[in-house]
Every structure is written in structure tokens, then in C-alpha cells.
Length: 353
Image 1 (cartoon, rainbow, N blue to C red):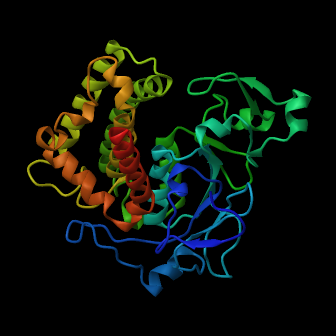
Image 2: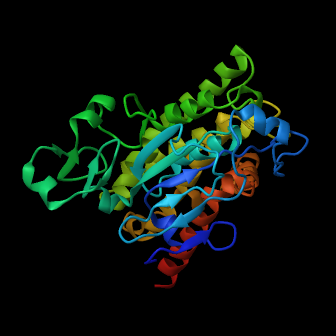
């Protein structure tokens, strides 16, 4: 684990610890061109466009400031940029579903902060707009004690203000800059980022019909996400059953088939001639589902292999190629690169063990 107060540049030295979870990542305002004639090549915004964003910002990569228990991630930005982010998100980390928001933020020029820790540590956090590790006094007071829900066991600690902003009491939990407005569910948080951004990027379409078609894909992802979550949580808890496995396999096949068809015969993006929220959502949901491969031993007790072992590149060639192509783009790779690298290492270590 990193100690002291070292600054690590993401471009040259992003530690594996970041893929495991950290506190306080800041995503800076940076814009990318991602269109059909140049689908994966980064293009910096022009000076004229940077002025249209509304305030001068640095285009350097953000870095990692590690200081004791608080692995604070600070954006490397210009002195002119205000400290307050456009959106704050609290979540367990890593969480591919919040990457929907971070990817969208990079693409449409929105400044967001992310606070959190690995799932096993989040139970010892105070869930709040100003989320932080618990103190002994917090635990002793009993003021914040709540019963845990899906994905957590035992007790959690949430402020009244958190529950007012987030009545379902779940994470990821996004907040307006003043903490007064809560936004929950990853697709809604992603939409909020785009609404805070700039319409010329077309992430949510440029007309009501395209926007509604994007919504259709986002709604379809929710059906898949429900079975995916039940499956992944049961794998982690070693309570997976053949019924859960079969349901997840069917949901995966249905979702991937739809994405594959949407890219036929040779479309570059799911909805239009440029990347949209539909593409971002697909990449993040696929990445999350791929974590099943890390639980091969739990599946072996059922006499089955990971669902993604069943030749997805052959069954869904357009969808898997789309995933791989977007993962290579810098707006996506900042999150997915370290995650996939760490995941491969864990899978290889598990196989050799």
C-alpha cells in the first residue's frame, strides 16, 4: 500500500492499488472527439471550445495524492478552476457502474469527485455528502446506525441528511455541489453528468427520437443488471445456485444479442454515428459482469464454468469488438485499463493456485 504523500501521475505510473479502491478521485474537464470517422482516436478540444466550456481548465492528467488513510485523489488542474466540483459521488470502489459517469464526464467536460473505499471497508464509513471513515465516537453514539441492505451485511452508518437525499439508502450516491440534491442509480447519475455538460458532444443524442432510443438501451441494461447483480453477489457470498447461474446466463445472452444486432452490419456505435450513453453503459455493464471469472472456484462447485468462457467473441463478435475498441480509447481506458489489468492478474493467480 502506498504511504506518505507521494504524487503519482496516471499517464506514467498508475498503481494497481487504484484498481482495488481508493478515496476521492477527481475527473477533470477534458473533451474528446469520438465520431464515426475517427472512432477511437483522442482529439483535444480547441482553445475556442475550451472557452465555451465556461472557465479555463488544465488539460493535464489527474494524479494521485496519497496521504495516510485518506488516499485523496486530486485533479491536476489550473489555478483558475474553482475547487467545487459539478457533482460528487460516493460509492464502493472499484465500481464499473460509476465509470458511466466518469467516462461521460471526460467526454463532455464535467468536473466530478468520487469518494469511497472497497466494499469490505465501506461498512466502516459514515455515509454522507461528506463521507469519511468512522470514528469510535460515531459508532458509540448510535446516531447513525442503520440495518444493511443488498450487498452489505450487519450494520451501516448513514446520516439523516444522506437518507433524505437518498431515500433508498444505496450507493452509488451522487450529490449536487451543495449536497442538497441526491441522485441515485448509475444510469441516472450518468444522465446528470451529460445534462451538466455540453450538448454538442451528442452523448444523449441531438433530438428527442435519438434520446429516446438511447433511453431504450439504458432501460434494457437495467433488466440485465438486475440478474447480473444477484449473480455476482451470490458468487462473492459463495451462495450461488444453478438457478441463479442459469438466469444470469440467459440475461447475458439476451443483452449481448441485442447489442450485437444493434451494431449490424458494420455500425461503429450502438445508436448513432458517435458514442452515446448507450455505448458507455454497455462497456461498464460488460466489464462488471466479467468479474464472474474471478470466482471460478465457486462456479466449480456447481460443475459449471464462467458464462463469459462460452466464446462471447464467436457468439457476439460485433459486441465484443465494440467493447475492446472502446476500452482502448483514453476516455474509457483511464478507468477500464487498470481494472482489466488487475483482473487478469487475479484470474491468472487463481488459475495457477
